[in-house]
Length: 167
Image (cartoon, rainbow, N blue to C red; front, side):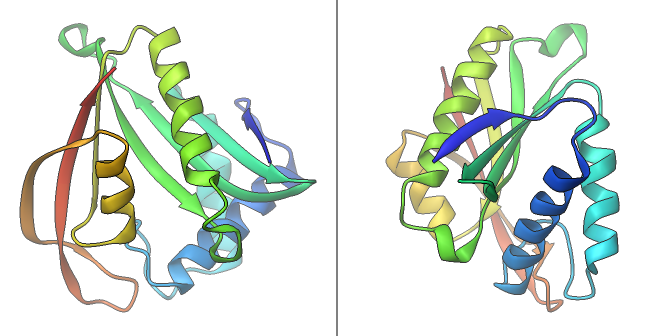
C-alpha cells in the first residue's frame, strides 16, 4: 500500500477514485457529511473542490493503481490557531479495511501536521463506531460527546465524539 499527497488539482483518475471511496463509505452507513442520495457526480464535484481548498492537505492510500483510502488535514489559519489542525474524512473502502490502511494514513497525516508546525489535532467521529476505537488505540483522547450531532446517510441522528491528540 502506498500513501501519497494530493496536489491542488488532482487528476481526474484520482478524483474518481476518491469519489468511489466516498460513495462506498456512505453506502456502508458512514456518517461523513453525506446522505444516501449522494451520486457519483456529486462525489466527484465535492472532491474536485475539496482538493483545491487552500490550507487543506489530503493523503491518499493506493493498492496498486486503485484508491482505497484517504484522509484530510484542515489547517487552522487564524493567528491564534496555527498550532492546531482538524482531521477530516478518514475514509477506507470497505473491502480494504483491516489491512492497516487507516493507520498508515494517520501516520502520514501526523508527519504532515508536524511539518506544518501543528502540535494539536482534533476530530469528530460517530460515537461507538470502529473509527472511535481506532483513534483511542492510537492515543487520541475523548473531549466530549454531543447527542444527535450528525445524521447518518439514511437520515437517523447519532451522537458524535470529539477527540484530540498532541503531537
